[in-house]
Image 1 (cartoon, helix red, strand yellow):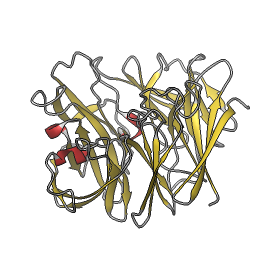
Image 2 (cartoon, rainbow, N blue to C red):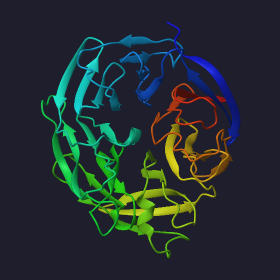
Image 3 (cartoon, helix red, strand yellow):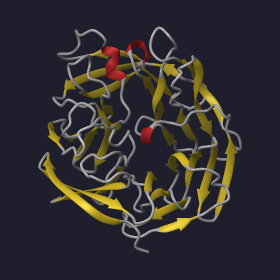
Image 4 (spheres, rainbow, N blue to C red):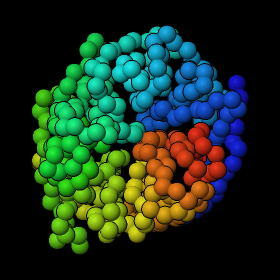
Amino acid sequence: MKYAEVVDAFKFQVGGIGIRMEYLRCRGTTLRYLCDAFHLDRQTSALWVWDRENNRLGRSDDYGESWRFFESQALTGAPVSAIALSADEIICLLEDRKLVRFDPNNSLEYQLPADVFAWHGSWGGDVDDSGGLMFAEYQTDDAWPPVPISVWRLDKDGNVPYRVLSRIAGRQPPKGEIRHFHTCCYLSEHGLWLVSSGDIGIHNRVWISKDGKSDWVECRIAVKGELAELEGLEQLLRFTSLQEHCGQIIWLTDDDLDGLGPCFVEARLVGETLQLSPRRLFGANLLRNLVRVPGQGYLGISEAKKKSQGPEVYFIDLEGNIDGPVELPGVHGKSCPFTKSVGSRCFQNGVCFTPHLGKVVFSGRGGLIRWRLEGI
């Protein structure tokens, strides 16, 4: 059925590619983006949302044109975070700290400790080739007591999630070993899990593991290029999204290196060392989402916290050439996380999605943004 409608749109160009941003809303309720199954190796698609007013899951198989909705007794609270296990199955972390594996015909429930934090954004949890699920906690307690937080794993046929990596979280050094975990991603080209943390100084760290269970190794860093002599280079490890590209791991920093500006980082893993080649980006805002554009490159999307005119967008082509920033309009002129590191990891058939948080680009609050590539 027709449920969400395009109520506004905005067009721009970056990297020679036209992009149309479409603001999707629906009458009487708010659709909140959860996850999607947009991947290079899948021909089918599924976009999953939470219908907040009606307490149900929604799924679209045609990029938001039509929807099916599902209710379940297992959904005892609103989903905080979600991961698509396939086009037909997702796993949600609910407000009451219950993991629910859901498909239209069945649901399984896994209880977590009450003090477990959700993962951050759409790169904070993932699934490996064995079907094992992992996610990394993102500490959000305003009191910031030093507490252990963990990376959790649920094996494909497992009944109980278990911890595989733990660190003490504190607000900033010297308290704690990290502030919170940022990413927890399976690198299929490398056959490795990668987990990163932040936010300040030595709290910015990266670990890798082959089995995603017990063989975790913390990576050293070696920095090449014009930024190699700067102090505080641990800040290059502060990122909330990443991609694999031609044997490298690439990301955009959620940090401005003490006023220098955010960076595009190409990282090559040599043993237990990440060889970083950073390049400055000349926007004001920190970067949140790095979205693959198959056969073309990558779209970088910032938050909207440093400039009143709104977020900034970059395009990095397959050769590493950078175009941008293109400044998008800001409606209310206030600080806003915009996507909060949530959204599609990859365009599929020229479409990807992010949430619309705050009055940025469009004047409404809530809903979805559908990003369409034009002229490809």
